[in-house]
Length: 441
Image (cartoon, rainbow, N blue to C red):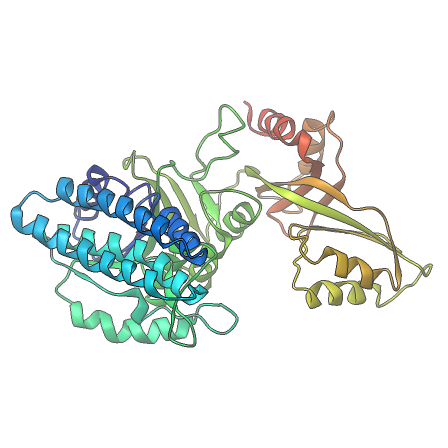
C-alpha cells in the first residue's frame, strides 16, 4: 500500500482536485490519500478566530460568509451531476453550520480555535471523497481524529496509530482509495488538536510508518527537492536521490519543501519517501531512502533568523564539566542549539529561538563570560557524501566562499553535513558562490 499526500495548492482549485483523482487511479495500487485544507482556507479560518477572540462577531460572520461563498462556488464547479452538487452542498452547509456555532461561545478559547482550524481539512477531505463517489471510484473516508493522537508533550503516539489502523483498515478491504485528513489529531484530553510541526506531511509519514507502507509520496507544486534555493539561485536542479539523513539535514536547515519531522517516522520504519510535482507528474522528483549515490555534493539549504552566542569559561585550562553546565541551561529553557564550536575554554553556539535568551544569558553569566550576541545570522548547510575517504571537501567549499566572511564552521559531526555561519547579508552571495563552485561543470 502507498500513502500519498497532497498539499493545499494541489487541491486548491476544482481542476486540481480533478487531476488528483486521475493521478491516484492511474494504477491499481491501493492508497491512503492524505489531504491538506484548500489553499488559503487555514489562514481564513485563523482570521475568523482572531475576530472571535476580539469579540467582533459582526466581522467574524462577514468572514464566514465570504469563505462559505468560496466553497459554494468550488462545489458548484467540481461536481458534474445534480446528485454530486447536492452531496457537496450538504457537506458545506453542515460544516459551516458548525463554524457559525462557534461564534456563540464566549470566551473564544484555544480549544475552539483548534476546532475551527480543523475545519479546513474536514471540508477538503469530505468534498474530495464525495467527488470520488460521484466518479464511481471505490473509496472511503477514514477520519484522522479516530487514529491520530498526541501525548502530553505534543508528540504523536505512533503505537496508538498502528493499533487503530490495524483495526480500521481491514474493514475497508474493498476500497482502492482511502481518504483522510492531514494535520489534525486529538490530544490526551480527547480534544481536537493538530500536529503543528510538518502538518500534513507529518501525518503521511506517521501513517506510512505505522502501516509499513511500500512508499510515501509527498505531492507539491515543485519538482522534488532542489540542490539550492531556486528563489535566490539561478540554474538549480532537482536532486534525484537523498538518504534519510541528508534529507533531514536539508529540511531542518531551511529546505521549504519538507519539514524535518516528516522524515523521522519514515526513517524509523525504513519506508521510502518520494517528493513529486502535481504540475508535472511525469517528472521523477526526489527519492529519499536508505541508499545513496557516490556524488560528493548533493544540495544546499539556508536557515535564517539565527543568533550566535559566544561563551568563555572564567576558569583556565581543564575546565571539565563546563559543557555539561552550559547545555543544562539550554535544556532548562527548552532552547535547542543548532551549531556548536569549541576550544579549551570557549564555546560558540547558535540558536534560532531567542525567546528565553535573557534568562539563559543571566544563568550563564554566573560562571561564564559572554560576548555580545551576533543577531541576523544564517546557517548554510551543505549535504552530501563527506566520508573520510573523500578528499578536498572542505577545500572546495572554502574556495567557493573565499570572498565571504565565515563566522563558524561545523564539520565532521556526521558524514553528510557541513554547516557554516555567515551574516544574513551575505546569504544570497554565499548560496550563488557555492552553486557555482560545487555544481558547475
